[in-house]
Length: 125
Image (cartoon, rainbow, N blue to C red; front, side, top):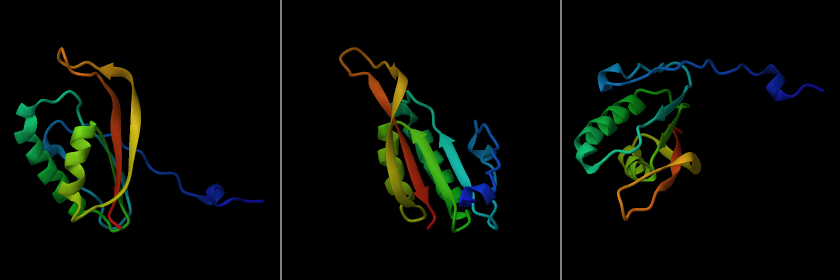
């Protein structure tokens, strides 16, 4: 007996390292896509200005996606909490998954180590 997955087309996986916002790739408006963004960990308050530019670029990128596309973001819990409301007018929140880190991120003395990342799943639909 054949299953639906037997006749499915595998996703084409392409890895793109984006070190500058100008390097953010173009989406394909004619096809549903799945994008995974892995954001840097260990950022500080001083990085807030760069974060605003990132969210603005991600917002523009999300607007350009096909209506059946998915965006996943792996980041810190704090950045995830900031990301969802900033994209809520173009992407719909679907899921927040806590991902246990293999090596906890150490913090300054007196602060708890960070043991989890956040994986957000957002969709255009």
